[in-house]
Image 1 (cartoon, rainbow, N blue to C red):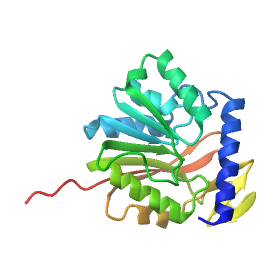
Image 2: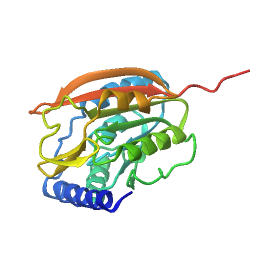
Image 3: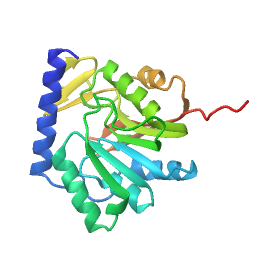
Length: 225
């Protein structure tokens, strides 16, 4: 990773730390629409253990726990995860929720084939290079069990903020202090190589609105002779 990438990552880390500190529970208590849909997909697949990447203060991780899943929630913001842990205790689901401070530019802190499902709402479209995104999806593949499901959402190049604000190259644009990697469709297809690409669903979120894709892809099961 180049020095400029390092600097952007640290600026974004500090920005999210301050944002969560200044606005506790900033996204509210209700789960995101993608999390509700993902829980249904995970349940249908027989998943029990869910890894959430970029969990923030935990509205989606807590929803998964309330639905009966065991959840490992990761984020690079200790402030957000502290809020998540407090909320898990208040909601009576602490026994089903674990947290880990983690930067997704580093290998995931899990053994091979150790989780049933992975969820990431707008994590892959943070200030990550295309190379880093590919490396992260390779890590997701490593920690998923055969037949495991990965549901992620990303803002795409049809979004109103694409090419607005400060450009950092590689389709990364910073607006209002938040840097976003806007996805072209071919990047979604590239990330699904070797997977079954089950769905790419367009949806909108927020007041702008943000324009996103919800992507569902499944690892092939173990083949039997």
